[in-house]
Amino acid sequence: MKRLFFFLISAMLVTSFMFSCTDKKESMQSDDQAELEKRYQEIVTLANQYSCENTGDWKFTAIGSKACGGASGYIAYSVKIDESSFLKKVDQFTKMQADYNKKWAAYSDCALVVQPKGVTCDNGKPKFTY
Image (cartoon, rainbow, N blue to C red; front, side, top):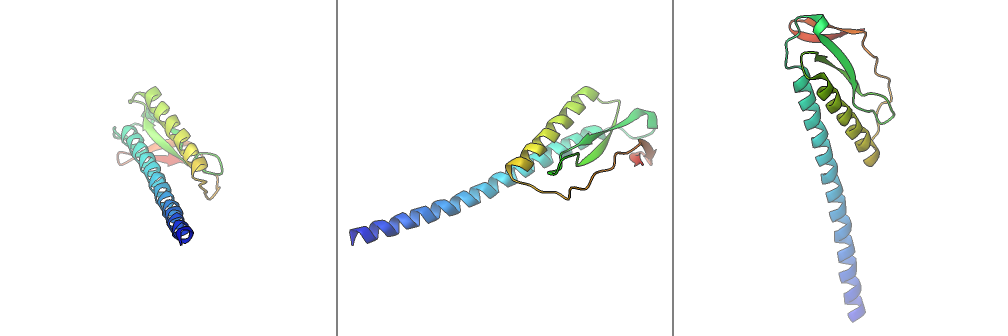
């Protein structure tokens, strides 16, 4: 009787640990996703703090990391911002996304993102030319 009781308690504990680990893993992954989104929004805010009036005042850079490799996109930014600090944030974000992809075994469409040829201004917003 004692063995049966011990076995049932052990089985309940193991089961509860299994489910708590799964919930914790999902929570940790969503925390990582939220941090990536927060960093991305900070970068977008920095990039777009000036209105696009003169095409010569704008550049672009690759941003992010697809699970299959390569950039996940491109972002236009004004040269009026602190460019070296901005590019450092973009590099940090790209590394964070690559680490996220490895950590959580992420997958993507593996399509190559076409690099723009330049940036033009359209109603105060930067637009890529291809």
